[in-house]
Image 1 (cartoon, rainbow, N blue to C red):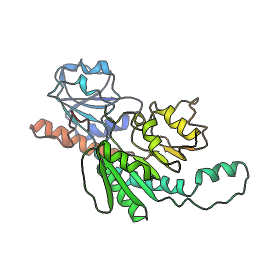
Image 2: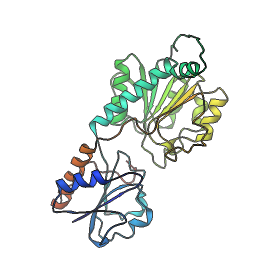
Image 3: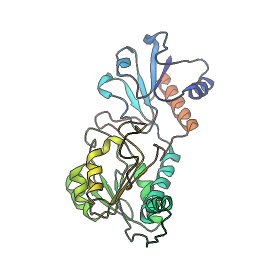
Length: 306
């Protein structure tokens, strides 16, 4: 067996060293320095070059390096190739803390006070009374975030593709459900997987259904947001603010209007970073299962994209 690491935009030295320690008899290489592409069975990928996939004739399985698989063009993979993703239990807790923190920051006007500090302006105001959080996406991340918010006194609604139930959460599903949920939301939190159906979902139409007091918090993928539509909503006073952790192109270029917008809080895709040791454990386990002909963990439904 041969493992190929195809992860762009980061130094993979530590990852490869740890994997090699756990799999001493397995050849581990990094694209494009691959001696024999015919021997590659397993690829660990994140934003891998599209041209690479057609050069791996004996590929059996692909693991995303993260919780999402949107960095992998599934149409380039043969039907028999298994696709799996990383599921980090700590990641859900980290995401819940991030969401709670930024909901509270928006409620308590912290962005306003930061700007006033730079101006030496002493202008206290009451915190916003708004306490209704709407969550787009109700997988493990959404459920953990909802619990954290409820425990801190927030009212929570959630929207999912299919009908779900949850204690103390008002659930909505389908297009009709989204129409019903949006007009009463104070903080809209996006935790959706990025698929063809959800790309650009936070657009003019959705934003127009939110009340002007609403804040958008996107901690999922940059592709969920139509950037100009968001900027227009903020500039036209039809949206109170936004907190953004993810962007269409990362890192965000210096000329992007997000950087200087007084109603936008930016963080550098740090809401929930998977622990390297947890990633290693999951990859090793799936490689062992692949060798044994067993079903892999955390398999992705390629039709649904998650």
